[in-house]
Length: 135
Image (tube, rainbow, N blue to C red; front, side):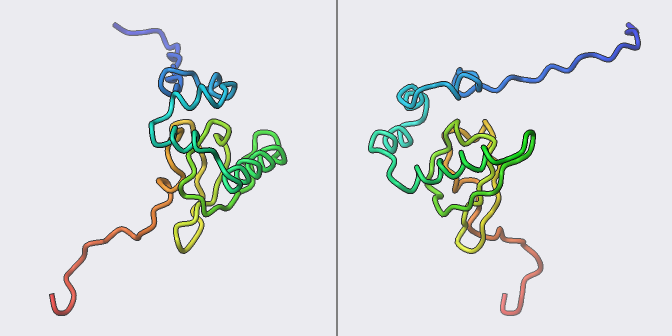
């Protein structure tokens, strides 16, 4: 009933994207990644990434390389709300434009396959209070 005073080891759930471990996702080829993502993202990759998304990935690589060890990389600002998050972007900090300001978004493994715009809300949520004049 009473355990000894030794604290129990906590086990953390290992992240995997559709059955593929996070470490394996970094080494995966783009053709194999295309088979893992949803149909809309797969279509986007098949049609090809043009200059702007590739420039964003290049800037993210540069920011990661210039960051000190165990530090967050510098923020890379972008208007590309329709960019699909790929494993190479994990750990980066992106400033996503919402039409007025750039919202900082730290890319995590759980965000794979989603769009950058999903993490930068474009409207101010309604705060319901007392009704105003003329209500």
